[in-house]
Structures are given as C-alpha cells and as structure tokens.
Image (cartoon, rainbow, N blue to C red):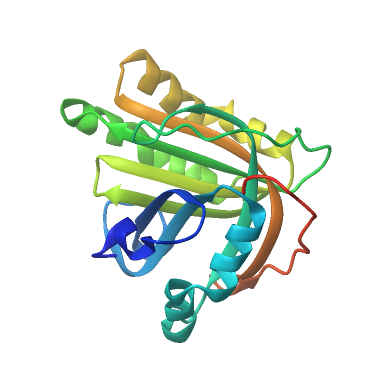
Amino acid sequence: MVRGPRALKGTRSLRFAKVLGSGFDGGFGVRPSKSRQGLFAVFGDAAAADEFAENSALVAGYRARCSELCIVKLRAWSSRGTWDGCQLHAGAPAPAAGPIAALTRASIALRKAPAFWRYAPAAQSALDTAPGCQLAVGLGEAPLLRQATFSIWDNVSAMDAYARSGAHQNAIQAAYGNQYFSESLFARFVILGLHGSWKGRMYPLAAKASDGLA
C-alpha cells in the first residue's frame, strides 16, 4: 500500500494501475480498513493479465499473507470519463447476459466534499441491499476525496435499476448538478474470469476466451 503503483514497476504490458485502500470491513464509510485492499490494473493483452495474476511477486505476496483473495478479470464494454487523465478502452461487445461488473470513481472537489458526503451514506446503504448485487466494495486512493466503488451484478437490468432510482439517483443528480467532482470515471465490464472469496463467499466462475484488454 505504501509503495503504490511503484510496486508494479516493470510488469509486462501494464498500462495503468492503482493500489487502493478500503472502507472498514470493505464497506463505504469514512472509517478505513486496516486489512482490506484493492488493486486495479489495466493490461495491453489478456496473456499479460493472466501472467501477472498467476506469477507476479506482488500477487504471490497477497496469497502468502491474506485470509481472503478475490481476482476478477474484466474487459470494458462501456466507459466514460477519466482516471488521472487515463481513459479505459471499451473494446468488448455489450453482454447478452450477466453477470457484469461496474467501476465508479471520482475525485471530489475539496470545497464540495461536505455536501457530497451528505448524500453518500444513503446511496451506499442502498447498494448493500440492492436486488441483484453480488458483490460491492468501497475503495479509495485517499480518504474522503478520491473514492471508488466496484460492484458485480446479476445482469445489466439489476445494475440499472439501482443506478436510476432512489438514493443513488438523487446522489448522482446532486453530484453532477452541483459539480462535486473534479474528475470522474464510470465503466461497465464483461467478466472474463472470477475466482476466490470475498467476505466468506466463494466465486468460482469459469473464464471466457478473450484476446483483448483485461
């Protein structure tokens, strides 16, 4: 965590990476977790992504020291916005069926942070119990100001039903209407492979063939 993306220096075909902290127990509150971390990495080809997940010293270190590890291999089919100026290439066709994954991240303007966090708890609580949500993780590069959410859904309809209703819709309308974000990214992914466990739940999904970005 201290080394950040420098821990991945020299990784073949790595295009972009973020080492992320998490909210307490992997959730979305301002209290940080002392043990749960996330890593988001973009590779130029699927083989490089597989090589990293299977053979890298960093992942080997995770395996040796963790009580749980969950690895998800993805390919974006929709993406808008940027992350530190980087855009994700959306090269996958839209999925005919689920499950699917979503990543939302934002840099919150310092003077707008108090207003943003008035909306956030209700939207995040709704996510924990949203129908069709298989997994949801609160992540961040820095407390309060650089936040991200990663989630896995049964299908696109379940994700859209959450995104376009209730507390989440109110939070998004307020965020964009009042310019709470100095930068944001929203991406949807086809899941190519998913294995490991998260909060005691096992994820043994089979991988699908892919020759694109992972």
